[in-house]
Image 1 (cartoon, rainbow, N blue to C red):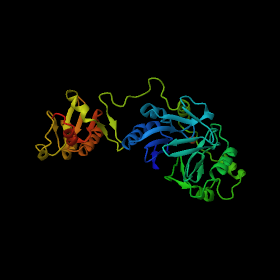
Image 2: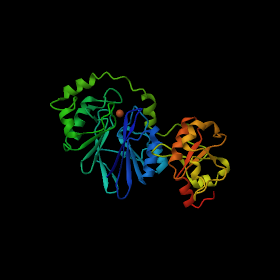
Image 3: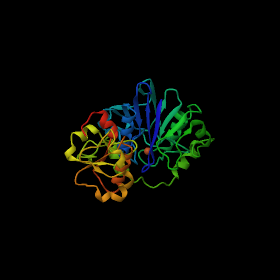
Length: 350
Ligand SMILES: [Fe+2]
C-alpha cells in the first residue's frame, strides 16, 4: 500500500494519503482546507485516482479539504452519518468498509471525543487511523462537541486496544512532533488510558485537562457541517491570469503549451547562463535574459507589467527563479514546466 503522512503546521493536523500501488486508486484521510493545493499536487504527481476523502470526525480546529477534493477530482466525501452533515456522499457507520483497489479500510465507531468519531483500520490490521480518539500518549479532549470521557474510554479499550500489538497508530494530531505509535505501546505507556488505568482514572484525568477553547471552533464546525464547502463567493481564485498549478515541491508552474499560445500576454524570463543561449535548444524570441546567479541583484530589471514566466534548460533553475521572484513580491509568476528541453520536445515555436 502506498502511504504518505502529511502535516499542517497551523492546526498540527496529520493528513494521510493511502493508495493501492497497482490500481493507483486512493483515499485521503483528514485533509485540511488550506493544504489543498499541496495535497492535490501530490495526488496528481503520483498519478493517483482519488476515490474518497474521509474525515475521522467533524473537526473543531480546522476546516476539512474534502469538498475541495471533490471539486478537483470528483471524489466522494465520507463522514460519520451521526453528524448529519451536508454534502456527504458516504454516510459512514460502524462496520462499513471503504475500498480502494485491493485495499480497504474498516470503519470502527470510536465516539467520545465527539459523538461521531470514527477510526479506520486497514484490512490486515497493521495500520489504524485513530482520529482524535487515541493520540500518541494522549486521547482527544472530551469537554465540548458532545464529548464524553466514559464513552471514549470504552471506545479505546473495546475498539482500538483489541487490535494487534504491532498495529501502527496514526493519529489526527500531534503537538510535540510525534508521528506514530503502536497499539501495544499505547496500551502500555499511554498516560491516560494505558497500563492498569480504570475508567474513573481516565475520566478524572480528562476532566482536568484545563485546555483553552479551540480558537477556530466557531468557524470550523459550521464549515465542516458543510464538508468544507466555502460560503458562496468565498472561493479565492488561485491565479486568474493563467492555469498555474503549485507543485508538491511548492513551485508555481505553467504548461509550455499554454505559454506558447499566450506569448503576448506574458513576459518571458530566461535564467540560463549566456553561453547556454546559443546552443541547440535556442532561446525564446523576446525573452529577457538574466542568469539565475544574478537574479537577486537584478530584480529591478524584471518587468512586472505582465505575468512573468521563467524558463531554463529543464525547469529546475527556473523553478528557483520563480521562487525568488515570488519572495521579492512578484505575485504573477510561474515556472515553465520542463524548460527549453520540453519546449523543444513538444515542437513549440521559439
Ligand atoms: Fe478533533
